[in-house]
Picture (cartoon, rainbow, N blue to C red):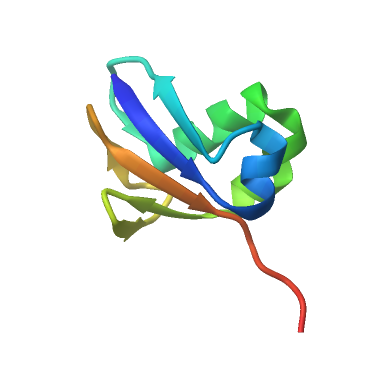
Length: 82
């Protein structure tokens, strides 16, 4: 299945682009599975990916949320500062 990723802040920098197209296995795929796969493909982004807030098709999602063909996923890294 094909999904489109929108990456923000440090994630876009460490993964080399603000948007990516990704081909995933056709089986049921969760947000947690996606984060783990991206962490293996982009090790430098791993810690931020695992903590990132996620939206799927413009709705906030949890690690248990499932993805489907054509899903649009946004990954927002944790924010720090004061």
